[in-house]
Amino acid sequence: MDDDFMRCLFKNNVPLVELVLRIITDKPDLVITHCETQKDMKRLAGARSLCLDAYGTDTSGKKYDLEIQRQEKGADPHRARYHSSVLDIENLHPREDFNELPDTYTIFITEKDVYGKSEPLYPIERINLITGHPFKDGEHILYVNGTYRADSDIGRSMHDLNCTRASDMNFKLMADRTRYLKEDPKGVSEMCQIMEDMRQDARTKSLKEVALRMLTAKKYKLEEIAVISGLSLEKVKELKADNTL
Picture 1 (cartoon, helix red, strand yellow):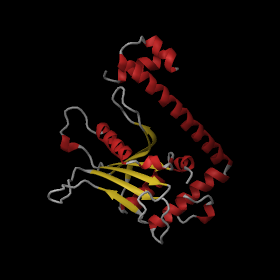
Picture 2 (tube, rainbow, N blue to C red):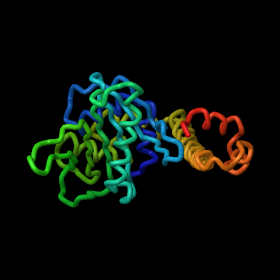
Picture 3 (tube, rainbow, N blue to C red):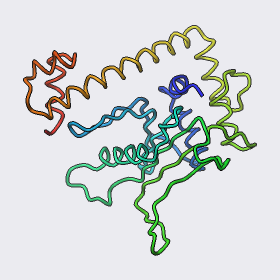
Picture 4 (cartoon, helix red, strand yellow):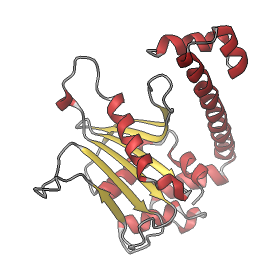
């Protein structure tokens, strides 16, 4: 599972994101009305920033965070908790009631079977431990077993996401996208640019985190923050304006 290549597969490709979400959630009629890849979420000043691999909204307003996790530490339950909390912060605005929070789905496609039960999916839901009834807070977390290969849509999709040759893939959407990125000169150039953009985004995010911590400390002049963080003075001023300290 090459996570960078998989992110390139999903980049600016709503139909492919929609296909994978339909299979994972078992919602064949799911329609994604809006989707962003490598989405930077709004954060409170000083908090750890988060960039979502694919962030989508369906026709009923439900939110989906689709993540590719190659390293085992990426499946830590605390990470899922943090991703889910960020979706909540992003989707409740001033003066809105708490019951207006949309249902959210935080989905991790993992390279290994993290729970070792050979299941395709591991849904995580809250329950009331006394009554045994679902808590129904609208939060849904799913771990997808990237090693699953049964004769089913999810088994075939996991095969395709781990496959290196378009000719061996089951789903035409994945095969066509893979063939374009790996065999078409224009697609190869596009993939190189996407990967370079992702590396640059990661570097910028790191610099922003440094600047935000310094802003939170309230001990540094803006010019000092710019010099130490490596950001421009204009960008530091934007960060200060965008964050409530």
